[in-house]
Length: 113
Image (cartoon, rainbow, N blue to C red; front, side, top):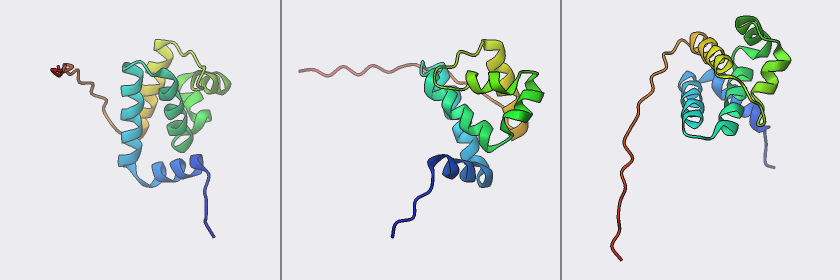
């Protein structure tokens, strides 16, 4: 008999017991935002919020209604830069991490045919 567990439950449990995994998710969400994949980034942020502080505490910390935050962090959400900054700052403080961004040059490889 195969035991299965809901994906979201698995993510929540892993984030709660493994801070490095939580940090890796936050790093991935930031990278996705900056590299043009905001839909996936918002969903990862939503998972992080659910697994850490929850939307009610995020609402208090950002002075934004919980329902608005839920909409912002949905696949079709459209948070402003100010709202994203507020969300990242609350998560950063809650997770006790600094966020550093590094820009790297794209290496183009040409193959002779």
